Each structure stands twice: as structure tokens, then as C-alpha cells.
Image (cartoon, one colour):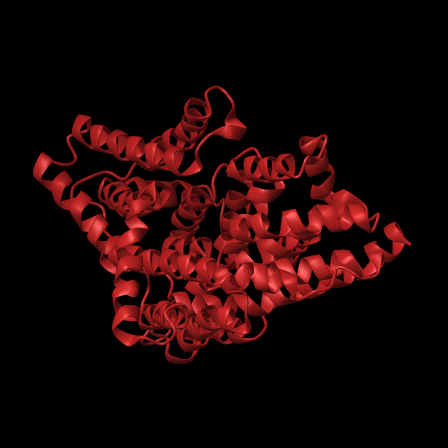
Length: 471
């Protein structure tokens, strides 16, 4: 379609979600509005198309794998907590005075988010799960924890691209007949300014303990009133799963958490190696994370059995309870995937890309590429989709205008990660809120000002880089 109407579904969904805080209804209305546009306003056909899109989400293998992964994450968390693994880790850290301040609890999440770079959903799970007990202890709001979890997610995955992110960019550059795509990617990373600036802004906020916008109120609420969530908040993970106590009579042991998590991380690389037939960069990320979390669940169950902590009946109950506790997350993911297909059919991304002219001055191109890619990723909720749309636009345009190619590619990477980071429709935003046991709309509202600050600094950087490198 490629008209201004293609922008309506994502804009409607985002505005309604922020205004009403009803994410499910907002996403559903966004999908329905897209179906109405595609079917020229026919209401019954639009309703049928909306239902069909929700069902068709499960036809995509990677979508199903992500949904299964998220379900099993709930089971893994329930097993680890009931077996005393999480409490054991907290006791270990506290007993050695490793974390003794609010700043230290936040830095723990920051460090975990930097160190783990294999896959975005796994990163969010580990960062949220490890840091949450300490952040709760020191009255760090769930909004702040979700900011830390999300900001160290996509930016780090792109900065250390030994994962599906790197494989995607190399593949897209290869299609554009770039002679040495790996080298271009390597040179573009230092020029992907948003990736660094988002992390630096977060680190400054943690170290200086200075917050802005809605986050300031959230942190004051947590410190002064002890309320980690605002009254009426609806976290994406049920509190009875996130705060499951160690089974009575069981001695908390850190290894009951550390071992399954280490197994999960190792299995990511095994999965990438196997699915990539010996090449990690060509492996399937969605398959690898599903294998990884499934193996971690099995290891956690075996450890509980060998230590005689849980019975078979208790394990079955915990697995099902964990899955049920993440049901809201899975519903949101299905809706987010469905609205993504609406945007794809409407041509939302290509329409935004066509809004800027190819007759731009060379020095302005990096800035425009950054902004346009960011708008596409924000409106569609997909950095990968934005990459797929903009790299075929950016590479030939940069070549034609004699713009430094790594700078143009870096602008695409920065814009895609910014839009993904800032969008309420993004799966990384959704999973980060889940891992932090935060309300999705609250996470979006409190995170957006920080993302915009980093984006503003990035825009200035691309303007300066364009002037210095291309003029």
C-alpha cells in the first residue's frame, strides 16, 4: 500500500497503550485497524482477517519457538526459586558484602547485561533474574531494573555480534554485493553511536543516581514508600511465580541456580554450532534458545531430584505454574507478532524509507538514515525488520553519494537498535519487562526519556561525522 495509512496501526496501538495502559486491547485494535485498511473498511472481513493473523502467528516456526521459550522461562524460574537456587545466590552475595548499596545492585544488573551477549531473550532473563532480588532488597524500582535489563540487551547483542544479529547483518550486506561484508560490519560497529551512548547514559544514571521524567517518581516511590511497583501496576510475570519462596526445610544453595544458568548459556553456543552446521554465525537463534532453556529446565529438575528437594508431583506443578505465570507475556507476543504482519502487508517500513529523497547532500545522509531506521523500528517493533528494509536502501545510496559505507551501515544499526529499544511493540522490550517483573507500559514510559537522550546525542554525532567524513 505504501501510503500514510500504513502508519496508522502501529501509531494507534502505541498511543492507546500509553493512554489506557490496556496493552492487549491496544494491540488488538491496532491489528484490526490494519485489517480494515487492507480490506477497504469491510468490518466482517476485517474481523476474520484479524483472527486469521493471530492464528497464523503459529505458522512461523521461529515465533512458536520464542513463545515456547518464554513459557519454559517461567518453569525454569519457578524450579530455581523453589529449589533454593535464587535465595542461595542472594545469600552468597550478601554474606560476602559484594553488594551493599543501591548503586551496587544496579551495577550488578549492568555487568550481567554486558557479560552475557549470546542472545537477547536469554540476556534479559539472566539480567532480570540475577539482579531482581538484590534490587528488591535495596528498594530499586522495577521500572529501573527493567531499564537496566532492556538497555543492556539489544545494544550489547549488536556490539558483540557473535550471534544471530551479526549473521543477519552479514547476510544483508552480502545480498547487496558488498565485497567484504564481515569487514564492513566490523568497521561499522565503532560508528554505531547509539549502542555506546545508550550504555553510557545508563551507566551515568546508575553512578550519579540522577533520574529524569517518570523514572524519578518511580525511584522516589520505591525508596520512600517501599513500593517497587506503582499501585495498580500489572507485571508481565505473576508475582507468585517471581517471588516463589524456597521449599521449607531446604537449604538454599547458589549452585541450584548457577549450574542451570551456565548450562543454558553453553547450550546457546552448542545450538548455534549445530544449527549452523559448524558456523556459529549461521546458526538459528530461536532454535538455540529453545534448546538452551529446555536443557536448563531438565538440569534443574535432575538437581532437585538428586538432592531430594522436590518430588515428581511438585516438579509437574512448578513447571505448569511457571508456564501459567507467563501467559500474559505470551498473549502480548502473539499480538505483537500479528501487528508486525499487518505493518509488513501495509508496507509501513518501505513507506517510511521512501519519505526521504535520494537527492540529499552526502553529509546529511548518515543522520537521515539513523532517523528513518529508528522510526521504522519504533513503529514496527522490530530492529531486524528495520535492518532488512534499510540496508538495501542505505548501501546503494551511500555508494552513489560516495558516503563512507561503514558510517552508513553504522547509522542503520544505531537507528534499528534505538527504535527497538524505545518501542513498546518490541519483543526485547516486552521480555525485559517480563524478566524484571515490571508493568510493560510503565517500563515504556520510564525508559523512553533515556532512549531519547541517547538518540539525540547520536543524531548530533551523525551530523558531525557526516560533515567530517564526507565533506
